[in-house]
Image 1 (spheres, one colour):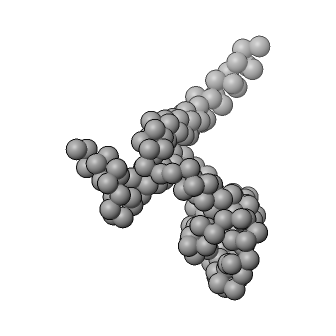
Image 2 (tube, rainbow, N blue to C red):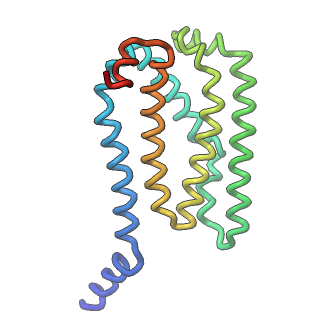
Image 3 (cartoon, rainbow, N blue to C red):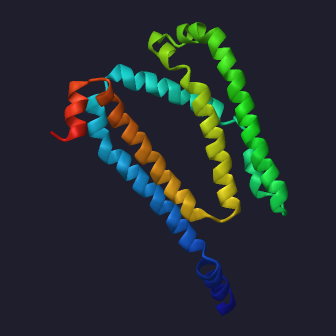
Length: 190
C-alpha cells in the first residue's frame, strides 16, 4: 500500500505534473476572468449586428481552423527525435500558409456568394480576415503542440493570457479610432 502511495506522490510532486496542471489551469482561469470582466464594456461598444458578424467569422475560423494543418500538428509531440518534430512543425506552418493562400483566392472569387449563403452582407467587408486568421490559427496550434512537446507549460499559460489581452485591447481601441463617441469616452476613461 505504501508503495502505491509513494508512486502516486512521485508522479504528482517530483515530476512536476501538479505544478504544470496548476499553471495551465491558472492561465486559462485568468484569461477567462479577463473576458468576463470586460464583457459589459464590450457589449456597450458594439451593436448586436456586430456581435452577429463576429460570431459568424469565428464559426468559420472554428470550422476551418480544425483542419488548417490537416491535423498534423497533433503529431508534433510523437517523434522521439526533435529533428523529426521540428520538421513536422515547419510542415504544419507551410500547410497552414498554403491552405490560407488557397482560401484567400476562393474568397476573392466567391465572397459575394458566401455573403448570400450566410444572409449577411455585413460579413463581406470582413471576409479578407478569414485567411489571415486561419494562418494565425495554424501557427498558434502548431506552436502549442511544440510547446507541449518541450514541456513549456508556462509559455502556454502566458500565451493564453496575452491572446485575451490583445483581443480585448483591439476590441476597445478600434472603435475609438473610428471616431465612435461612446468608445472614445470609454477608452480614454473620461
